[in-house]
Image (tube, rainbow, N blue to C red; front, side, top):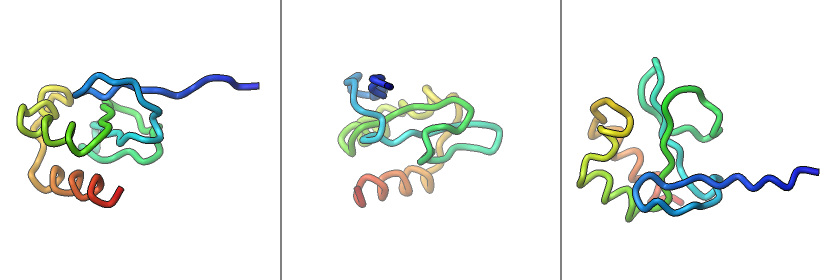
Length: 85
């Protein structure tokens, strides 16, 4: 029996939340993308809400956490994911 609960910390607000309720952004050799499987290799970050997303964009936390420049196109795609959720 597996009693393990899969919680992750939002890199903005630092709250522990079930990973299924968050988005995982991953950077690997193929670039930056939204990891809907939660299993892709590379540097990953979890974010919980649109409020946290807006704070991360304002303070450029994505760039520092993923150690690369994030395009406006990707940020728009990520924002639409929160709008659709």
